[in-house]
Length: 113
Length: 112
Image (cartoon, rainbow over all chains, first blue to last red; front, side, top):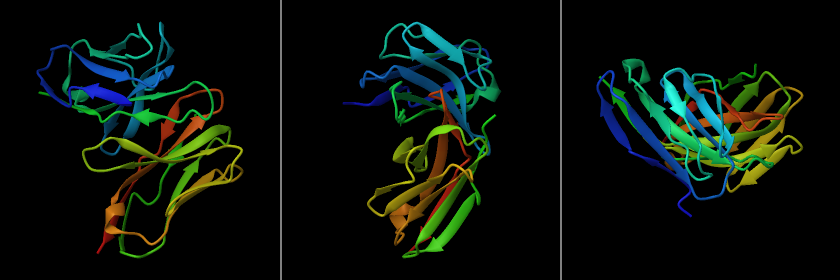
């Protein structure tokens, strides 16, 4: 199993550009989520999904869109990038059954200039 | 709203010491608590998960305990090594939800 994979690993965007961060998992996990990690702020939940076709907002959803058309994939879209979105983005997945152990991808480091 | 706290934010120790890392949470209605390790520039690696019905879990030199009544979890590292240097994060899953709430982490440096 590859686990949770994320692409790209690094990305530089100009303000106003759009892009999609890809996340895929091969563990047949129903629950998937996106976090951003910033110095001094820890990891904060952006969006999450409990299954295909179901998504919901986390703590910091503004400026981001998600969709979940398959169990395996959960892309994160930045519609109009802003410097405040410079961060490291992590995708995670887990079963929706106990004990809900979560598995994380390697992260995408995004810089918006 | 659940809040998870890790104090201190950083710790530097000589090799060989036995360490206790602390994690506190405000809402005791958690389903589980998970400890992670993060190396610089890398993702999160799960170390131990303790379910609410358990009091501790062990893996090698690591032992994690959970006391829901006091809102605390501790990660014990025996005979620390320079390779243990990393940031350690704890995170709680709230009952009825799969969502993790993270502490801000503790940066550990083990000096040879």
